[in-house]
Image (cartoon, rainbow, N blue to C red; front, side, top):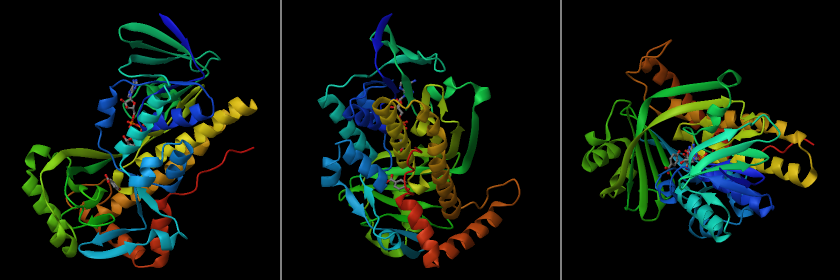
Length: 404
Ligand code: APR
Ligand code: PHB
């Protein structure tokens, strides 16, 4: 067994782990990242790319924002189409000037990976059997296998940035964890295509045939989604079938402009709301998807990971720069407050924008639930106060500071 020593072990090299590692390193706080997969595999995951201002600020503070600032697109609003009737949610006007940045998560990850490599900071790809040890003691560590060798990294703290299927959450004893979950009765069929997007900004479509979303990656790369039944299969959908259904659900003017082309990625993803409480256990902290999952309807997944990172980063700076070890007890409470706001917004947007007809629910039929939600959507779209409620949450609620 080879022994290594660092201050913080980060498990996972997704956006959470890489961003945390970059911020800590810039403050001179030593950290090692352990990643189960290869870097190419991590970069192969297609994910949303709507960044709240808080995340944009963090990436700038981390010194990895040059490409984002050059290639990212600032969006001042988005459209919601309700069976073809469109309402513009003017984020900039409704929030006193706030906007969101459209910049693919893969690009964020690529920039963070490049920065870590350029700084020659330790990251162990293809680490296996990663296991936090003695997390409630004063000598926590993480064991893992790398290139056939057994390692133990002695550390002060462990950041579990290893996503929903990682090892960190399961390290918290079951009896110490409370998990909240909702599985949605539909999925999203997503297509990536090298075609000009149908709109400069996003169009969220509520339609009797089902939800659709028109998003983008750049001026020549589009990302589209269709709500499909949970038991649907991607092989049931030819490109042609996808484009025809998308046209039916888009508002007429967008459908008329839709440029179709071969899909370069096509997949179906389930929708889930999930929160694990607490997000800390001894010297182990859960960050991002390791602790929570949101349906993508509110574009909150990456942004909630970023706010977790921001809170843990502030705590670690206070621990190492002011010697205040007590402040670690603030992490879970502060992180969860914002997580639940993001969970609620994502749950609310999912309920309002998807079609529940044909879904059997515990206390009412799906048709009835859909009627309630259609009325809810119409009410919020129909008033400036309602549109402001949507806008404030979409641009992201403020990050909470640590208590003194
Ligand atoms: N050991 C080491 N690494 C692991 C382990 C393990 N046991 N289990 C998982 N990992 C790695 C995964 O391979 C992945 O690269 O942890 C990383 C977790 O990354 P994400 O799942 O992307 O989670 P996170 O970094 O929190 O980012 C959240 O990513 O999945 C999207 O929608 C999500 O936008 C959100 C964002
Ligand atoms: C995406 O571009 O993939 C995307 C954008 C906004 C969402 C979900 C997905 O709400």
